[in-house]
Image (cartoon, rainbow, N blue to C red):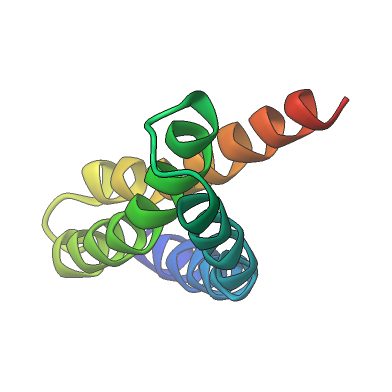
Length: 99
């Protein structure tokens, strides 16, 4: 079980690295929105807050998962799945806004 959990943690960290590379595109788009519009409209909340929270979420969940995978494997699995859900939810939201 611990070997499978370690493999899962490594695979998800690779996924997080690839999505973090695309995070820079989102960050530039969010900064462009901030430069053009200083009011708090819906575009600001949809783009800027998830972009700011994403790296913090990945680092904190990954750190906790690696730290606790020996003592609490189920909790580690759940904590490492949270950023994956974040990626899926933000992608679905982006697809709904673009159609």
